[in-house]
Image (cartoon, rainbow, N blue to C red; front, side, top):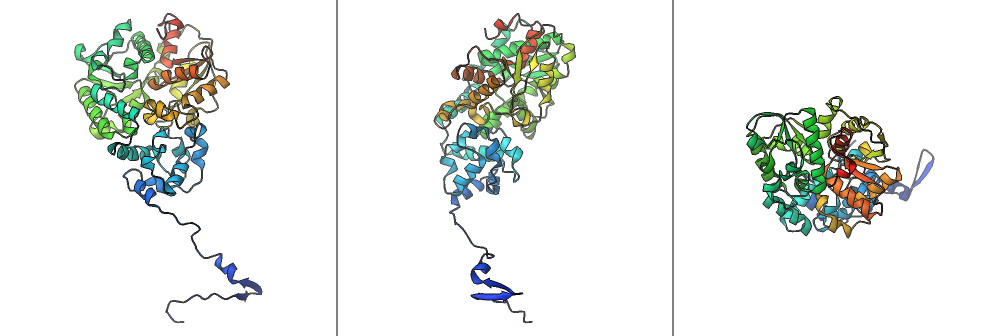
Length: 430
């Protein structure tokens, strides 16, 4: 047989082993394009470092079934891919700012289309091109200027300690090593309901005899949400400042209030020289729960909202539940979406500062969707363990017409009440 390349010929009809085959039947097995696309918009995204995996999508749709945004709008990684494949610019699309980086899509994606890397990478380019929503840019500016997205004076960062009723050592004045450096974060330092949780936690630390201190005015925002929203430069500036401040003092471990700060300290700060043993406050208290005298029953039906950055991002589901189970009289009921399948509150990935923008693109806020689920399961209290959530859910309780039906409380507040460290539920929020 000749080694020359064989040429194919199409016959109108042939008979093979007694079977009559036509030319049209033969053409069924030839590769052929069904539709051709101009992939330049998709290639613009996949050429960005960190966003390459958007091109891996093969349209199975698993992400759409679990994306919390799709329950209140028209969004999922599959839809983002398809629109971009059809020529829509992600850099100019509202889709770019809707993702809360909750990580539920990555949990089920067989191709590992990683929105946790894609969205921050593309957003960073959009921010540099001046295409970010104004309310997000305002939060960036406030953080850069004041060290917090609320625009509050850094000199007032530790003012909440005056209301704590217990000693809260500030490291610059303490002049001694401590066992625990408590990284308080912004909303627990400035927001009225965040300060309530900080007061509760300070009283718990004192009741347990914890040797702790805080940075006070030397602390700035951990910056993880700003990073996920596209401002990596701002994040690095904040991280370098915090690492420098922390390095001035001697301590054994960091306890953080905020799951977003927890994520930053675990996964981002080490690359910048900040290697610290870090735990979330629920993990720390879960290890000491038997030392806390929980004597006052809380006879309420309580459900717990898993924070995305504590649960799906970092695998901690049990510590908050261990604390709630330890409270006498409390009945813990799980919502249908709980643990790894939990809904998002809408505050992650910059969503905390995008409610105005989202109003034009979603049928309701994710926080409202979550509150309705808590009501559906008959909860009296929605327990939380992330500083973003108390204010978001309390607003959602009001906007959904459920004022007086559902109370939103940080786990620290519930523990402090049961331990008799807060005089009564009325004290919370004052």
